[in-house]
Length: 197
Image (cartoon, rainbow, N blue to C red):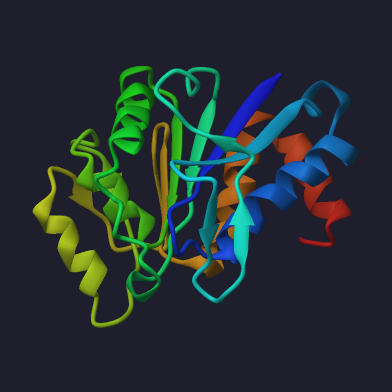
């Protein structure tokens, strides 16, 4: 069984979370049989988080340094600063999690502003990345502060690092991750069953 962790910071956006839970949920029901064993879990450094636009989510697993070694991919949804999204970006557990994923060449996908939290760990180096491109390119301009290669595109994939510019790209990024973890044939089947072309 493959496992995906969705790391939730305070203020994460539900749409960015749901894009991945729904795509992989559909996969486990209607995907090709050999790929129906991908488990998705929400994880965090605290038991529940408040979302950007209201509502709270109780995470499925409280993450510690001892229990993040069994994941094959990590998703980091973005959120708004006004909802405290950047408040805990120096969290020790998050930094150790990113260090482990980078050192083991595992898949990391970051959406929108989550790219900034990811880069703050300092473990992502010499990789092509994107982030939120609007708001006078405020977030994109921050990329020059890190040892990476900023790319002004909506979706950027550099080997096992997938980044995108906002919630509108999250679903496409989820599909690209599904294809990376399964196959083109399986991706086509899931899109057809979700009425997406």
